[in-house]
Picture 1 (tube, helix red, strand yellow):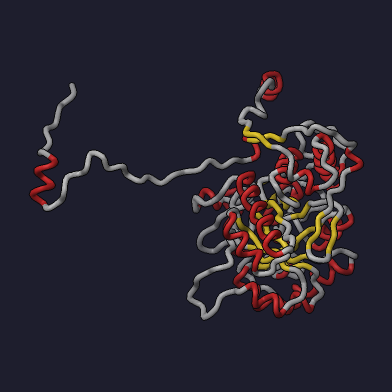
Picture 2: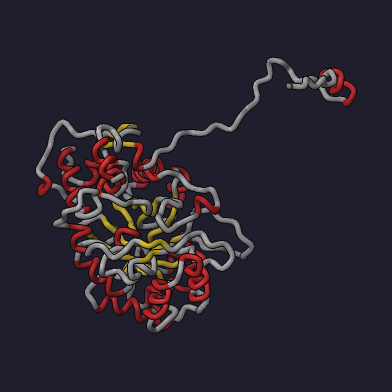
Length: 405
């Protein structure tokens, strides 16, 4: 049985308390939400002209450094060590070494990596938190950079904004070619309790090497960062397989929308200044299709972690964790098992017998560019895209049936 409750007359109640009654014509202002899109919700439309894949060019330029493929390996300890950085360079791409990780805390971090690989899921984060308490050593920073350079590779290294002012001169003097300043969210304007936080415009007066900054997801913040003089911008907040920022903080923008907004910022800044600052979509990229959608959305390159962590060349023994996983007070990542299931050569160039798009990523990008008639990355950025929530399910009933067997 439903019981009716009689309430006092609202108008007289408010009148007695001194409040005017609500106007029947009053329209409240609710927060408006705009739609954002991830990889699985969009598709690339083929072009009116097609070209052979071998005719396309897909280089990436960061400052004075040119790369034949637009692929960057993430600055994560389970992905990049000096040996992997050299291998990635020989493959035509770039790998970034995390200077605040185990490679600059321990002479030989292999025992720690073995411990991580053998730890249970419940133990993993605590082990990382303990291991990362060790201080960074300046001598190891110089040594790791030298190991990459001795292998003939371009040395790209990553630090957080908090460590940049102190470490930037040492990094440059040690021979690094590219400095990546990376945090979960980066802006040109930042408030803190320090007398003066990191100012990129002042940083660039003291060092000569190109600086890549990330991560951003919005138009205005990206334009403001580019105006400081950065060499490239990383795009993406929270999409990585090992990142839990979206769960812990509730912050993030799906990568297709984030890339489109930051590409618009890049083009706006180019018209404003005449200086082209590439953007690199960072995180959540698993397949060749994801790579292609990043570039078609406007990106100049992609940064990936998990796919590289699964190669035999990676140091993580088939495991992978984010940069914020070892945070002492608020971990924003987790250790994930990706397995050792491919080689760097097969991941990037094939040949492959996999049908899920997780190998021969360069071949996938070449093929998609050819189908859209794009001779280079800039032309592929102009490819038409559509909202297509059924792009991965339409007509695929037999695939789903087989997957459930």
